[in-house]
Amino acid sequence: MKKVDVLIAVFALLLIVGCKEGQKEGDVAQRETGKGDMVRTIIEDEGSFYHIDFGNYPSDDQSLPIGVFDSGIGGLTVLKAIVNYDENENGTHKTGGDGILDFGKESFIYLGDQANMPYGNYSRENKIDLLNEHIIKDAQFLMGNSYYSDVQDTTANGDKQAVKVLIIACNTATAYGKEHIEAFLKKAKLDLKVIGVIDAGVRGALESIEKEEDAIIGVLATEGTVASKGYQNTIVKFKEELGYSGNIEVFSQGGVGIAEAVDEDPDYFDRNLRKPRKEYKGPGLSGNVKIDKTLFDIYNFDFDQGKMLCDSENSDDCSILQINDAENYVRYHLVTLLEQIRKSGTTNRLKSIILGCTHYPYMTDEIEAILKELYQYQAKDGTYFYQKFMARHIQLIDPAVDTAKELHEYLKNEALFNPKGNIMDSEFYISVANQDNPNVTTDSEGRFPYDYKYGRKAGEIQEYVKVVPFSRKNISNEILDRFQEQLPYVYQLMRNFNQANGKTRHLALDSKI
Figure 1 (spheres, rainbow, N blue to C red):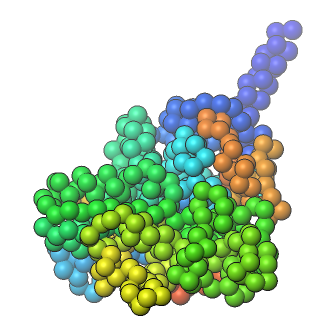
Figure 2: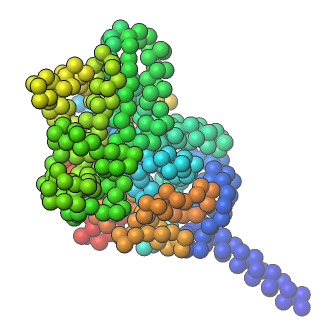
Figure 3: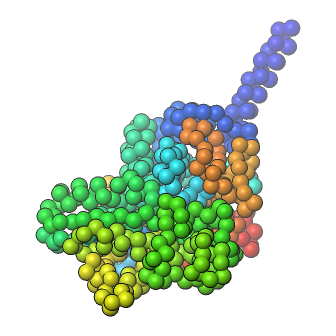
């Protein structure tokens, strides 16, 4: 009997060990679906998929890549500014471009949390705790070593590198989550630099104004970023610290639908639609975000090819009206911003607009053209409707360039520049709904429906998503064409990862970027 007891005990021990190993490798359908604190889980729970051994984290390793994350693909505009940055001499790192890219020997790991975007809506749905959990998971992915080769895989790979810097290339995530990430790293006893985009944007906007000048700074951002007052509070803080004595006013506009249309979120944009749909979440003739029919002439919406959806053949007779085009969303929000300013009674003029969402630089040409159009707009009596509230040339502030500047200063001061690296080793990942998790709900396209996306609760330790490499399986041809046109160098890096990196050899040829 003693031999039998020993054999049973040994078998039980092997079974326990085997189960734990299976969990770490990643049978996602059976893995953790408990409740708890995500930060504690990452730091302390060695059996968790999310655990990171911070005691052996190589944060001072020059060869490590730089981590960048956003709620979707918008953060690639921040990466564009970084990878194209040439404001310093290589080798000495002294100020002054030398024709050689400053970060040419650095590699980057980019994460777009596409499955959970847009982050700007979590505040509206009173789910800031869930948003912060997503942000912590974004940081965990960049610092960890796990990813999936494909959405259909149930076993995660463990050969991803850690990162030496975290860049939050998302305004909403910076506003709500930067301090949470820093607190998380403090608990983990890890000295890792976190760079956000809001401070950079504010510095850029103030640089467009003289120290004693009266002016208006506009903030075009997501609803969540506007609700956080992150830009407004930072402008007030920096105005005092930098000695600006003029009357600087801040007017903010939550750009509902702009980022979503850029990312082709079906609740806001569907190129195949020609009639309104029930699931629409953008501005309309009723609700909290209203299209004002009296301003139709000023909006100057484009109704061609389903870019506006109306329940009547005559646009003047719409009882249901839905925006279905990124430029039309921009038109709506710029007019709404100028209406705020016009009705405020201010005597100041709009001098600059901070593009407070990383998706908005994709629309820079459209924004500039519409601002010129509005500057020239005349009322029926011939007077210019908005000119006295607008500078003739309104400067668009993209925080990305100042983010690149801050990154360069940090790497220089900490001696963390990679002397032998190659930017072509950069990697690109995106989150997709984890359909192997029985608790996950998806629509016919395999995405989270709106009510499920924002209806979940924080503290449920489970994998809602899988993080996989960029490919044509998870990014549309239209978006990839935009990358190629507007972000050519980033697209080249993306293409190299998709075609030459060992982590993507499994992809079929027709899915390669």
